[in-house]
Length: 156
Length: 211
Image (cartoon, rainbow over all chains, first blue to last red; front, side, top):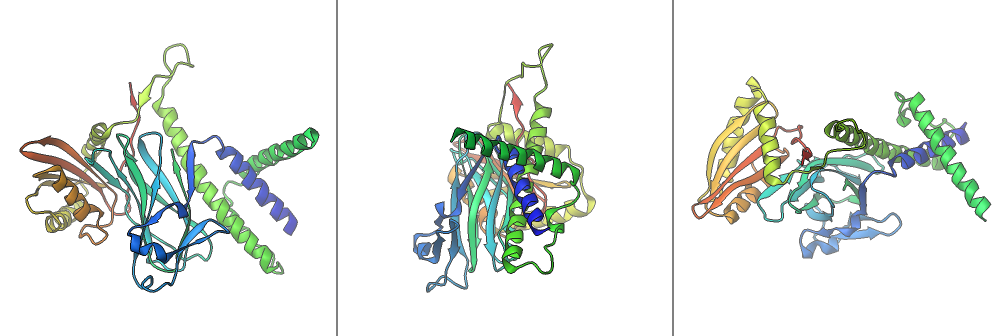
């Protein structure tokens, strides 16, 4: 029974992965981002095992929000559906997506989405950022230790 | 070697087909409903938990992609007698996107309860965070969106307004998605319109425009 359950789960994952294989999507590990201010760079530690980046307890890094930004690249204009995979031990942390046009005349943003405590990696969806006129999009997080970001996926 | 690769490829394809059939037969039953046996080891429980998380993530991505695919199908009607000919289209630039939002907003009815309350709240919040020299114009909230007009002395002043009143985590306005767009720029200043979604609602997504 246990073995059957495992086979079914793996087969399901393979099938879904195959179905998603043709979609135009992008994905990057969360450690490709940066702290919002250089002084906060020391507040993050990369976990090389799973490629995540998480807050740490270095002096000055706890008891407050630390900003973390992840720039995303998209080949085409349009509204983006962005998913951030994370693991959190609090509900204070929050992320949003932001889009800015090349000329600085258009700004779009999702609302902030707060983290959940589930004890295992979970995904939040940030709909709202729109790339127009070859502008930029990015994920903007306000993190409160302890929380780790794992991966960002978005439509290209 | 090639025989072995072929066998592996065949196994993957069979697995994928099996998975498709499996999911179609039990679309109502989620992986979260499957519980490991009580005598399962901690390792197995952890593995099931990890797989559930992955499946949930993939399901979310799959649903979104299905929605996008459906939207594209609706937006690209076939032309004439030749079903292979699909009209060209482009994603809107920022002013075209503003026009799409304007049309969506105008199509909304007023929500008697929310509109009045949101009008007042948006006016108070945005006035508080408005930079010196900028002015708040008409504020109109319907059922899901508010439309806000502002004018600014310069483009930099508009950007300061966006940072202070819309992007700042400590802003006075509620936590909702928005789209802020400059409409005109001249020596006399900048005019802009901002659409702000009700908390829990989304800003309408861009729609492709036929060329």
